[in-house]
Length: 490
Image 1 (cartoon, one colour):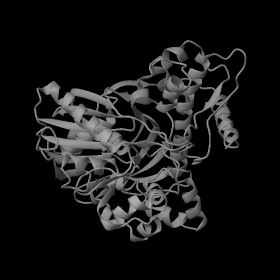
Image 2 (tube, one colour):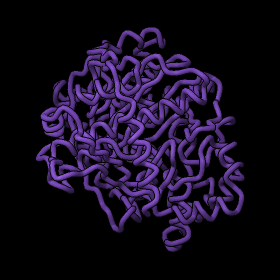
Image 3 (cartoon, one colour):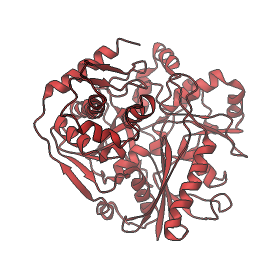
């Protein structure tokens, strides 16, 4: 009995084969191309995402002799919008990625019209080009020939999870789960349904949108003609950050996690209560049961984390591979006074400034690339600190610990820095691919491989706990000052 977890991330697709003990039997990864048509614009070719899924899934299943999975789980980059033809499944344009900022002017227009308070009340999300809604409005305004297909119903709209289900099912299913739907800014997070007033404001016809389903249960079926001859149920779906919280067994109110991927995303489980943030956080659906019960979370989204390391590698040539940043940073005792604000695609929580640009302060003749590497890792930890502080302000209590996952969580230096600046223990699981594991756990629950959340608690295993050491608070205060200064230059 095996579960195939498809983790369609921002830069590539990871597929896991997981057994009923929660052990990963096979893993495969395929990258796809990133497109940057203009400054601030980020796009993906949906067909390349699908091909990456096909290749990664085939490779992963090779570890178990090509055995067809019992069930399939899907997790995905959120907010990214995909359009595809109802019949051919071909995309009329590239997907607009969550990082894309082209909708900033439209967001300003809606804010000036006085819509933000109502939108936040219904969705838990403030106005920002991060969310799917403004991306769809941009297409409607700027590409009317494509949008006409959406209006007539020939072209369907969804996030990456919806697109993958369409491809896996041969177009038979057009669905999205509650967690992904909550990030479009088109769903009322109290009712769990598309909201007519929001759809009117953003100009999105409801008949083009997917049906909203729970996060686990029998959700759809694959078409063997489209997917390696496999006929299997899709029984779990969630946005990547909600899946990571689930994958770290963050089932209870007060549980939290941080995933260090392309960005850094902190989720804090608030149970069946939606907490309205007063400090720049998002209120979001964590997951919904087949019975309709919704678990909510507070979320802080840091737009640039691992992508800052990629920029050191690809943009500056400071390192040859991402893993080199750790060795380089460890070669110096501190950052030498260098402070890096990695606002390479604007600032997310808690500042929410899409126009902010990155900056580096404190450079001297003695500054080396090692100091810049160290300042980069510190910046990741300090950005997370800003979100954790906001959670404490919104909930009235500080976090007691933080569970971590994602590629950058493998860095001992980063994790120790995180524990130090938060002054709480940081717990790193054995499996850093918590997004994929969360998809597998949801799918297993939906297929009754596991009968309850209590059974799933045993799947999460701890690799190391980083205990906080003495921390010089002045380092963090300098970073906060640098953020203020960098927001002056736009």
